Length: 343
Image (tube, rainbow, N blue to C red; front, side, top):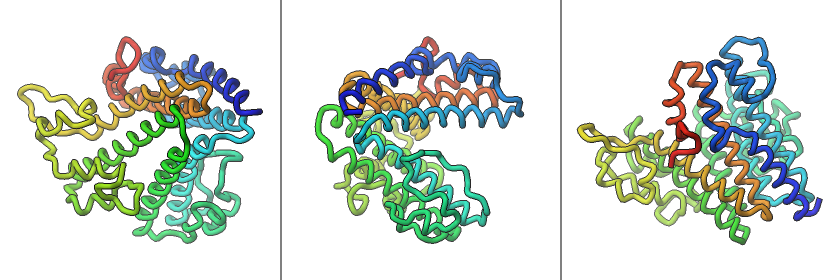
C-alpha cells in the first residue's frame, strides 16, 4: 500500500481502536471493577480463564500487552516502506528480549525465556538458542557475543539501554517536518526525565555521589557532560538539595514536582515526577496523533497513548490485588475521578 493510502487506512483503524480503549474519559472505568474477573471481562469482553488470582492478574497484563504489540506491528505491515521511526520503536522490545536472554544464560537456564514476539520485525535469531553469538550475529547487538558473568550483566544491560536511546535519537533527528519536530520534543523530554528520575533515586535511596552518578546517565554524545542534550539537565541538578522546595519551584519541569504541604517537611519524590511526566507525555501523544493524520508519525502518538493505557491497566490490576482504593490508584496514574487526566 502506498504511503498516503496506508496513512489514511491506518489512521482510521487506529482511531477506531482508541475509541474503544480505556483512555481519556474511559480510563476511570478500569478502576470501577470490583474484582480481577470483572476487570478481565471489561477489557477483553470474554469470560476469564479459570486460574488462581495471581495468575489471572498476570494474564490480564500479558494479554493486554500482546494485543497492543500485535496491533502496532500489523499497522506497520500496512506500509510498503514504513517510516524507520515506526520500526525503530520496536527496538526497545528487542533490547528487552536480549536482556532476558542474557540473564537466562547467566543463570544457567536451559530453555529460551519468554520474549516479546515482534514477528517479521525481529532482528535477533531466537532459533539459535543458546548460542548467544549466533543469536546476535549480523545485528546491531553483535557485540553481545558471550554469556555475561554475574558481575558483568548490569554493565551490559546499561550498554543495551544506551544503544537503544541513541538509536531512537538518530532515527528521529534524521527527519524533517512539524510532526517530527513534535516527536523530537516528546522523546527528548522522555530521555531527560528518565535521567533525572534515575539520578534522584540514586541520591535518595543509595546515597550515591555526583561523580558516581554521572557515568550512569543516558547520553547521546560520547560521554555524559554539560554539552549532552539529555544528560546535561540531570547533571545540572545533582548539586541541588533534595529537601528545599524553594530551590526547585522555578525548575523548568516544576509542574512535575510533588506538592509542598504546610507544616510538613518536603522532600522531592522521583516516583511522583515519573508518574506526572507519563501524563504529560500522554497529552503530547494525543496532539501528535490527532493533529498529524497525514504523517505516519501519528502512529507513534497512538503507540504512546496505548502504552499509557497499559500503565493504567497494570495499576488497576495491582490495586485489586493489594486492596488499594480506586481513588488512590487513579491518583497514582494521574486520572481524575470525573474522567480525563490530571495535569
